[in-house]
Length: 349
Image: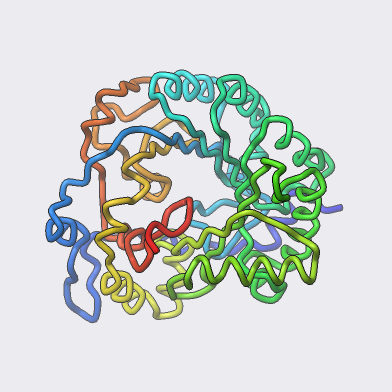
């Protein structure tokens, strides 16, 4: 069996490392900024509504190299959260009063102290979400028991599955990923995940494979449920549709394919005030692997830290976070286009 590193490296492609700019021109002209749009609906500066969710990036190491990944994660990434930083997270979570902790990566399970953190959070009685890429469960024997570990701590599992066919899934995430994902989903179903009345939540995530917005979330969920149930006997709870933001690898793709201008125009034209009022950054804090703090994980990847003095876990003060101005930029149009987009899927119907 290939190592995790070898498996991911086979899919790797060098990113262009294009920097997203606030006033990048479209068709040779400047375009409406996100700040201007917020001003139009009396929402600027964007303010938090409280801290309900702590989203923690445990590191950028991953056994996959997905084309749409905004983290630029892969087997060659060495950034990893230490246990000391995890303990600082636990202290901040208690002070914040957040009820939910959302663990992400990379593949968060590849952090050597992943289980330590889950056990601590479970002891605190927090709702725990793990963003699992599915293939990690079957990629290496040391992860084969993850379904049972998740069940023990009542972890909510959120997993990316670009489509219910191998062709579309593998084109986005790498050859053989669909087959491994199906295998992993069956393992999760076997311990009760996604099954009616089990209380074990298994949600899937859909990201578009190209320069377009996701379809209607409810309609797509019904398609996924029927196809996966009828062909593979797989069950899940919800399907989240997430818009690809024009940063990192997806930005590289947009530029290479000459789709950047048209995509940005589409996001701006579909600006939805209701979605803007309910963007996830208003009730979420994002923590980087090194303990720095951000309004969301997209800002984290652009190194747009919280607009407060010393934005690090070591300086966490709940009262400061609740009065800050949220940092926005034109990539935020991705969260407010159409039905809106968040880590929990569409924002409005």
